[in-house]
Amino acid sequence: MRVRILARSLGLTVLLAGSLLGLAPGSAAAASTDFTIGIPGKTGCLVCHGDPKLTEVKDKKALYISESESLASVHKDVPCVKCHTDFDASMASQSHQNKITDSKKVAGLSCKNCHEHSKQLKIYNKSTHGRMALGGDSKAPTCADCHGSHDIKSLKKNKAYKAEFQMSAREVCGKCHKKSYDSYSDYYHGRAYKTGATDAPACWDCHGSHDILPAENVESKVSSRNLAKTCGDCHTDSRTGFTDFGRLIHGRQTILNKNIVFKYADIVYSWASDKVTGIASAASKGKKTSEGK
Image (tube, rainbow, N blue to C red; front, side, top):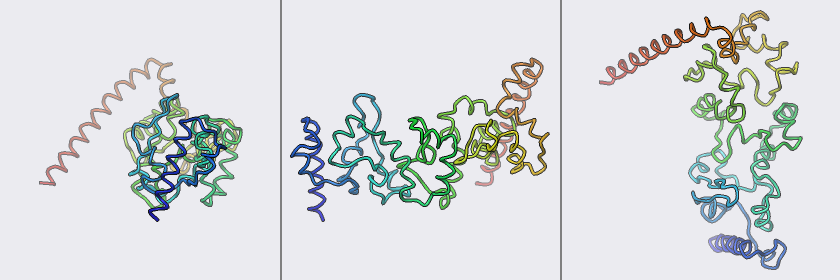
């Protein structure tokens, strides 16, 4: 076994040397390499990608993969090429240097190769994000963009991670939809969520996840036809008229800017609310401290 691993490691060395010397992927040196990716530990991809300083020369993009994060993920026993299906040793120099494919996007869409996600995939393909991906848009969010990649954990089996993920809308959605996330600032939804209220909705609770569509689409969860039903998931007495208040969820600041009375009333309310929250928080901490003595 050690001999086999050593041979593979030497294969990587020969391959990388060939790349540096400008040998073509089809040359004798490259063809004679018997190297496979997915070897555990420091003898596989992490020979290079385990280096914290590894970056692309041109784009200065970090290429470091944390071994500890990978080993703590649900994919700890999955070989790299199970996700990075566009990579093999015979074309290493070409795929790494000339970027024939976008390895991140290829890996991000490879979940379907192992997981039985046919239902989610069918829904995703009809969504805004899925249509972007099928159309070749490099900015289209893939499974990995939302669920994570090398550090991915199970939302079903890991309750602590599920709670953590629920509060990560800024990283999951806000990195692409910054303006929308910033405008999510009404008292009972956005502001509550951003201050850590676990019962406040994340973006996907209202807009959907695999099935997300523009509000103008009648099938969207936030379309005028479906909004009352969506609100009803939390507000059991919601009716069509109830949803009129929905415009405040992302439009609070716009409305305040148009009405000076509301604007200054909001400033006073916010100040008072912060004071009350601060006092309550301090009292809670003081109580816990006294109980711990």
